[in-house]
Length: 608
Ligand code: ADP
Ligand code: MN
Image (tube, rainbow, N blue to C red; front, side, top):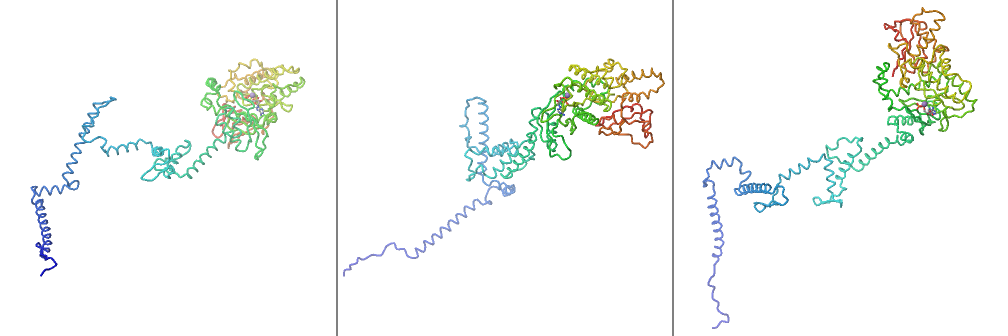
């Protein structure tokens, strides 16, 4: 029978299940095979099978070589690197030697093992950074470099972030830098020791404070007085005192210069109306004694040559001497005021600056007598007034003006006002009488020129003032060594060296001789001469114990009982405003163990 289906023969290569299963088996065998092979391989590198003795391996182990490098190849590479670098360095050295400073150089780069641009030398980099850091003076310099490194656009990219100049750290450091740049007088401390950062608000406060302080410092110069002082070129200490006078409420303003002389500058000022401690004149004159006296230096030689100055003044500070002038003017002025002469009223004294009432009105100073125009008959009364004042000054005030002339007499409210008395001295000053005679000559000369009819001669005026009728005044001049005007400014205590050539004593001796001749009395004790002289010198003396002119007189305070009136005359008139002891003794008196001898007879002790 025929089968429509073709007879399919059975497949020839039919693997049975067991075959399939055996494939799995074969794989397993392969793994086993691999494992065995692996075991075989591993057996060959087993240390036990190596040639290296176990001791050496142990030592290698111990020396920790493994820690650094456990690979021969790496060690080999490192060694190669080392060799290459040395080689390249050598090449570099040779190249440098060959090329020197030549502008055209031959490159040895091709001989290098490693091209130079690929060399990364971490060590030298570190060094550079270190050096760069050292070169900065301090942290602020580094900070400044940091700001400088910021490009114009105001930001840089750092680690993927945008850093702008407003970054708080950079800004804080910059503020700290700015503080360091404040004026030198601002104390900033040492901010370089740490990373100082100042916030804007702190910085602004510091800046404000500094500015305010600076402004305060300059304020005194900006104040009203600056107008006057700056122009006159007054020095800093003077300006400071003037400023203080304003600041203390004594003066309201200082308006300008009335006069500039060789030795002083006179300014006009208004007193502060709100000042309560004293009644001040509305308008004031400020006399500033110049402390930089050129002529003072040239006078040095006179001082040195004069024994009276030697111990006392050679070592004095010129500024202090100028203070003394101002002080002396004040005391002389007060003495004049006390005896009722017309003169400025003292307001205050501060170092070389003297404040007094202003003679004049509405900023206009009274004219000097020299500049006044008066009717001829008026000049006669002016003459009489001045002569009277001179009498009073000498005999009551016990002063010689020593620079009296039409320049130092002001004419105000129909009266003469006497000023400029810093050089005034007592009559017994070594040059006192010379000065008085000179004053008389100045006055007489002036009134002669004014054709005043009823005047005397200078000599007669001198005699009438002093009472030295018998003295030949022409002998006065040149009796004593020539004194410069500086010496006249101070009463120098005549010490043991004083001799009878002093005009005062000369005059007294002259007068006494005639008296002695008349009375034929020659048995007087020499020690009495002095008292006699004083009495003679002050014929019109009004003994007024209260006439101490506001100055302190130190009388001897002692437990020794002695009669002040008979043995010691404490002459309160002879007080120059300084604390002085003036003792006139007839006999040596022992006071508390210390003896007052002749030397103390007439001593003006300056205490400053
Ligand atoms: P100097 O030593 O420079 O001559 P003065 O004391 O004579 O000093 O003063 C100089 C000038 O200043 C005087 O001639 C006078 O014109 C003026 N003067 C001084 N003091 C006063 C004052 N109190 N009132 C008005 N003017 C004065
Ligand atoms: Mn003067």
